[in-house]
Image (cartoon, rainbow, N blue to C red; front, side):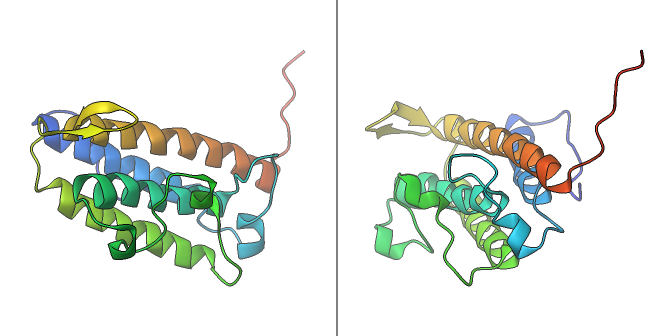
Length: 167
């Protein structure tokens, strides 16, 4: 990973580093795939390598642009509704386009998050009162989970030879 792992220091530095590492881990699950492979449906849900990254970009906008910055959906740099539309990748969007979208949304999230202390809170209709700390940790959880999904999809796409246990 191009971002060094930070294992000690200020809490915010540790949290932001872990979040950035999980962002990159999610991207890494799809890098090098063809656009066709990135769109392959291997499970019943809308989960594909490209849709996981598209969803992550929407999660960035939902939490940082809509919730923390209080922007209207029309002011966001992409889809920002909390529904299955977060996984929708339109025809003509390449994997590179979607990765760039996620990177832009992540950069904007960093800028917005920097305006708040970890202990700053806001009322959320679904979650109750949440802090910036909780939001950052929630994004770590979200992206780590989806990177795991992406790893499994990538394994299915790459189809490595199964190793048989020693008899």
